[in-house]
Image (cartoon, rainbow, N blue to C red; front, side, top):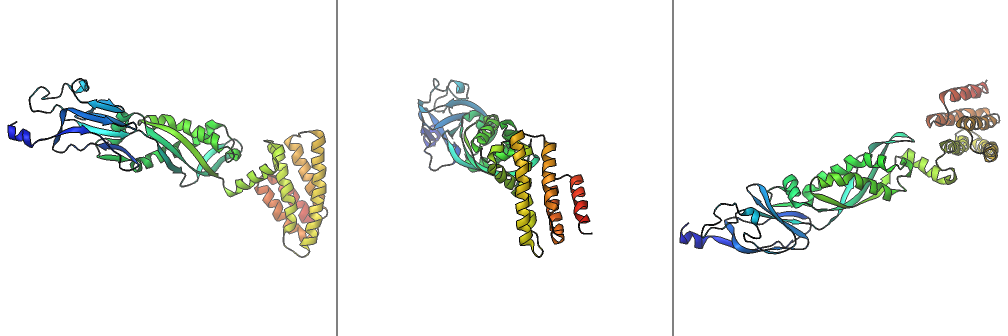
Length: 350
């Protein structure tokens, strides 16, 4: 290199990054037509880390502090060409800064309802959303796996990938949490903790640390939301599904009287009163006998329906059949029980 070429060459003596806005994860120090001067000062702020990359390989990583760049501070780079030649800069590698502060309020959600397995209902569908925070914990790994040689890499560039990781792990999180589906909405904190536990290894593989995860809402399908409302209304029953079905029967039978037809109001009052008396007897028996097997509960529910059916007027029978069909659809009545009751009611029309 001639003297004039050396004079024209630009040397960098101060290397630092002042973040001008939020959301930048990685930033490459501009090196175009410039070289780092031997003895230059490198400043890495408290929320940053710096990485030197030479010929595509990470050469050294610097944490927060101020450094004078010499062979003592960058021993890994001593093999670089022209290190001992006069007027030649030994530092021709690229320098990347990484922000290590928390990136908060990152949104996640289910764009469509997802299907999960549940011990009570088999397969169910839900929607959920919340937010999370993360930070870069391993800039070397993040550089080699994610950001690469780009001039800048932002949270927006990474958003889609992280959202995908969240959605991919929701089903496993629900399964590992042991929380029944109907209790998810009331246990959002436990759900969030289980989801974070599932996600931490996936984040670590790309140099990130998951700092927080929240579940702000779990939306249930309308039909299961009604079941949840009913279960809340009978909190004393707990997880006894037999009594839960009995409670559903008690809720459904008075509604049978709301069908159309002349005189349905009077018939409805009579039916509602009959249902209250009959079911009151069934519940009283349960209180005195303790928890009954499901078969006994189903038989008692059938007895209550039979007592009510005996008081029905002909004009109410068709409406009653429709309501019994709803009970069959909900699984409260079996097909055989429905067919038997249907035959019994149709006989009253003859």
